[in-house]
Length: 97
Image (cartoon, rainbow, N blue to C red; front, top):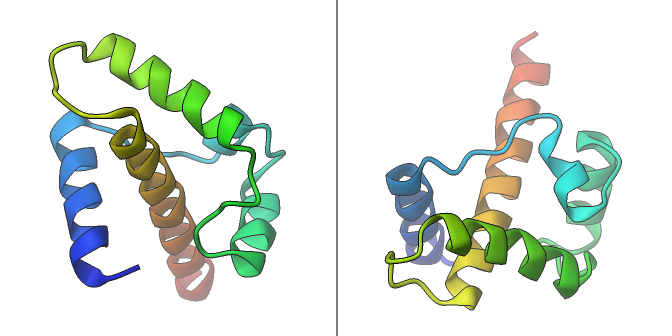
């Protein structure tokens, strides 16, 4: 991902208050943060998680933000960026702890 891509979706996540926590991986049928990290290590785009899972999460977001003007693809990208940001945060916590 380019820095511009990451910045765009981080800004959208901030605007709409989308942030993943330690329980969020379960929203895409992933057991925990460590399992998400292993999937990320295999594919930084997290395409190894079913698109159906991402779409379901994005559709839920769009239902709550009906007039946001975002596409399903953009909402999926937001969720994937939130997942990657969770991994960055937890990695920093481990290295600082």
